[in-house]
Image (cartoon, rainbow, N blue to C red; front, side, top):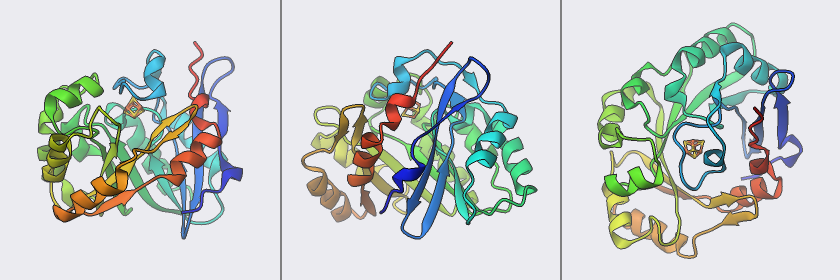
Length: 259
Ligand code: SF4
């Protein structure tokens, strides 16, 4: 994977003296991805995420998100990714308007991607796919319910997440489980066994490093854990270098809330 750092990061002032939000334009091999936020701050408050250090701001409006996309859209086909700051299921009406408006814009959108922590899992079925091939990413981070609730403070409905995703999985061309692997937090034998058994085996698992403003912390046993998951029949991707490059580009220190 190549990350085109010339397009990272971009700070945008949404209104005169209000907020800054990050927009990522990533050029991977064979695919351009434009990642935008859906909220300012995030109500989920994952303990490992810099967003949780700031108070939750508000939903981005549809117009604000459309402006972010039109300002940064590459001239070639790209994947429009609602995977930036915020919880997408908490802002579905505006995200729906964005997809509808952009589908008429003539921009070369080749597909959509959504990321959810499962804050409102019953709303996943409402995510707008329009005519696009659409990917769903689930931020899991722990399969054990108690542990997950501890890591991701405001996800009381995680218990039902796999069921809700299963109920609407035909909407999505691809479903991925995101797992930020952290030593001593979610890497025990039980944690990995729980991850291997979570959801449908068709859903692939992405093991991510912990991104901090001081760099990416790649779990020292990530390759061994990936092999363990593969042996259990799961499809696994391991991300190491992309995370490091994003940290080097200092993007995560740009998640700045200005009230
Ligand atoms: S859901 Fe995403 S943006 Fe929100 S706190 Fe968790 S990792 Fe951060």
